[in-house]
Length: 118
Image (cartoon, rainbow, N blue to C red; front, side, top):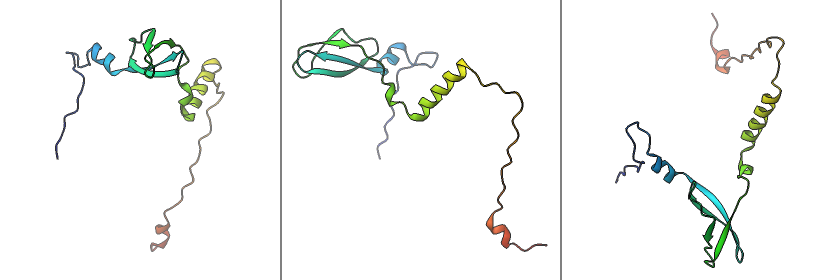
């Protein structure tokens, strides 16, 4: 079996990747609107998106569209956590006393009942 070494970005003396390497690794999705073909997405390095981009279908000039980030794909648990954090920021829960300790019911293992008793 042939083992490949992973391709990691070049690192600086501090051990972190060089800023140009980080920028190359970080890609963003930009939306463009072609007047003939309609909207399409392009993945480019962060901060390098031009105002106009060539349409992949008709090769015409397409202008960049600005839209909200794709937060709709956030899992429900993460979205609920964000809502809870925002509510706690506005009106944190106030506790007047220490909550009572919950007792965890202990269920012995079923095999213990078959052991001989002394």
